[in-house]
Length: 416
Image (cartoon, rainbow, N blue to C red; front, side):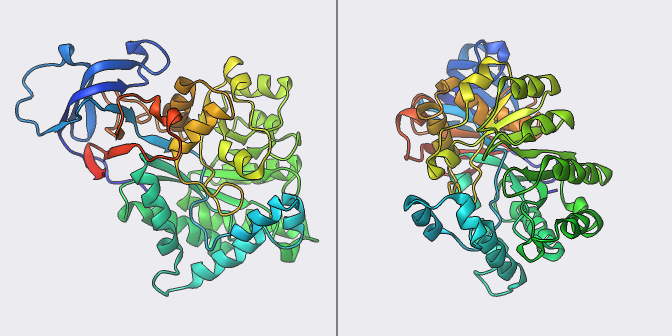
């Protein structure tokens, strides 16, 4: 589902690495930082990442890439995106800046509904440049160029079977055109189709009896937007149960717009992740910690919506596994850069640079159950970014600058 065939990958030796962030506890600290390092890649996987003095000999047959004292970090893993969509909603941002709320815009037929219309048109189009794939690929390529090597992609802008299916099909086509891995998620329960607003039961039955049977083979996860103006806890529980019957593991949009019970539901159903979590109390935190659910925080949404950021430090201190992601979407976080998310997580959400970088790499990988990425050690995928800087701290120090000098996917240079 959206990933290159096993076995693809290169042999390469990275030399003159000024600093490497391994996220490997063997090197100490949260991010396993090593200075004066080398990195050995065989068959697209890391064989060695550590101090130059400890590098095993006998590697003279390998091509070398001189990093010139630059820093190396794991490729970013963006664990929450809606990157396959039609059209943009720049005008909606202006409406919010003039004082309209997200809920008011949604009730007036804007918000998700306007994207649904544009996405349905794109899904039905065969005009070059207007198809869903043609619109998504430039966004994905910019993500890759900034160091993102794995993305989750949700459906949810179809709200009817054919378009929901086409979004997931498009997601699966992306790796054939861009060197990035895709993890697909079914989000038919994004909002209720506005034509069925007064008949929620019919829409829920459509998800259970038609959408899921058609879409489940194209996805790994089932997600629900459980919040004000979307789906209640009871409705979300029902959709997630239906997803489980089709083999899809649960994730949840939870507690973005209010304390509406989504976080507790995520813990109850042992969701892989609970995303947003802007409004959360001690009981929610304890439940999520007990369930092992990953907290996926989306600082770009708070920036765009001009709302307080998610309580990242509080969740870290409570012992939750934390990830950060872009939530790249046309309405509430039209942001593609995980580098910017790292900066926002520090400057706005008040994580430390180490917590933010770990959350954007290893945390994202854990949120997608991709244990072979988000770190650089023996056996990990050789997905990484070489920064045009001598330290990962520049990600926070220089927000707005694409610091990716080169991006490697399975040991091959794919950007820069």
